[in-house]
Structure formats: structure tokens, C-alpha cells
Image 1 (cartoon, rainbow, N blue to C red):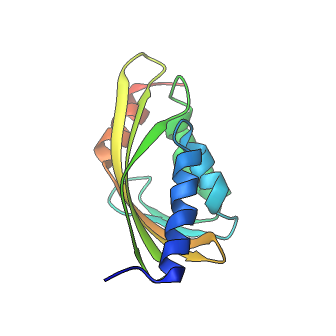
Image 2: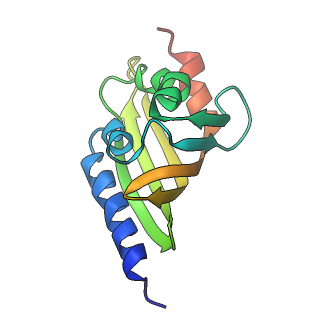
Length: 139
């Protein structure tokens, strides 16, 4: 079944943000998240849980990873799908930690959009890879 006009618009918004963030993952978040975005990182451990807004997500989850990388995290989109206001994105990331070791992860996001911005969503990722670099690389 073909996507509706609304679904196509939402797909294009997310596609554009992913392209903008291809060589710096932070640009993806800055483009379509807001200070009011409600976000969940699914799973277990200190970073799993709920966040309110881009700053909260950055301060409590992203900075711990991004500060341990030599340069911005690069991403590649593996797939995008839409269902109404929800866009599902499958993404891979790669980077090099400041200790010279590689970092890679995979993500599945369900992004709920309103007026071209993410209002809420949930993220699945390999938390083991995240915790490994955070524990290994001391700042």
C-alpha cells in the first residue's frame, strides 16, 4: 500500500535530517528534536530510561559517548518506514574512540512527528557497546 502524503512528508523530514547528520550524528538530533521532545532509550542500565528534551538527552546520554570519540559519530541509514505520524528508522553508526579503538552501533528509532519535529520516540541500540566505551575510555 502506498504511503499517504503525510507519511511521505514525514519520511522526507527524517531522511533530510539523517543526510545532514551523516558525518556528525549530533546534526540529526539538532535538526528535528526540540527542547520538549519526549524520548525513551529502551533497555537496562544507567542510560536506559526517559528524557525530556534535546538538552536532557544530550547531557544524560549522548555526551558520555560523543565526548569519548575522536571526531563526530558517522551514520548510515539502513531503512525508513512510515505509519501515519510515526517514522521508523534503522541506522548504523561508526566512529573511533579517543583511545584509537573503533566504535560501532546499530539503532532502531520510532519517531513520532508533529509539525515537522519529533515530539516523542523510542530508541533501541546495543547498550553493551555503549557501556563498553563509556567504561573503557576515561575522560
